[in-house]
Length: 417
Image 1: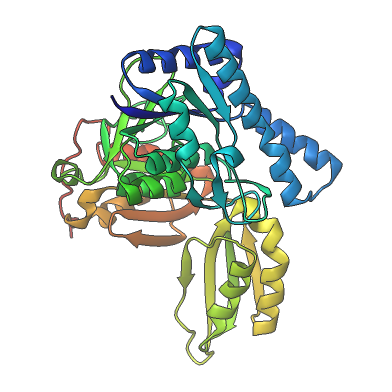
Image 2: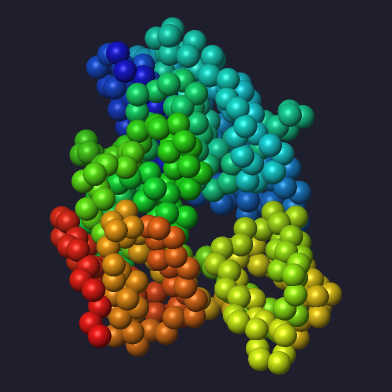
């Protein structure tokens, strides 16, 4: 008997017919001799509707009350799916985050899980019932309802799978797996059969919307096998697993892009110790995530430098005043903001041991007349900031240039010259 966790996204529970499909799939899995736990998201569009109502009431509503409101979407889904299973002759029980005892910190709208008490879930499945858990939510030490941020149901699913020792965590979405890039942009995008936690983590952090980044972090930490697949067919999807030798042979596994980036340039900052720490310390206090950071060399005789970095576009309005104020206090000449950018990236385990990958990426972009405004790298990732109008062109050029439409991308030859 296997213990299976299945997570269903908003499109999978979009209406009662979809919920019936979810119920039948879960009951079939149980009938095959497995214990089943379901994690459900809110019905498609419901969270946006609820948040829209909140912003009609107030331009900047209380984050605590936003969590109370937004969490109801998953509660509705959990109750309806449990009812549907019972209507079809099965046994089910719905459980909210507080009932499961998903303990989080108090960072409303983007809380992080601290601990999960899996006993309630285990008791439910041991009694022959399908546990239907509301995703995306938990409670803090004061008993306040918290939510885990967009895509948080993925994190709920992986965390519960880890807590109860599940054999597999199946993530059902509206796509049938992880692709080499966005198939809406590149028709030759190919579904990947297996991908490592590290590669999936990078792709998730770089804009791939299949899995929430924190869910991948948790899967990697607790070695939870994750199967990304669609609820609308029986076809296998993509397995997210530990690094394996055959995966390392693939130089570039995927191309990602992220349009939710804004560039900030603090111009002519005094070049002395502690200045950059002050700037980013203020942003950290506001819980603002900073991504790419580029510090240009000091200007000759000027003893100043330009500091360029990116923040989520959705967070820019909240931190603009802080950046301007801090820059003024530090003696910077000015601050410039640019929302017309996109980050394009390539990811692959094989980049660790293959030379020439960066040169080839730059050559492919240059061939299309695309200028690069910033670069960051890691062992298995290379990202560039470019103008947003070139996003789709860059993705297609990189996907074709690294031959990702093939079953296995070839090695990258050294650049000429």
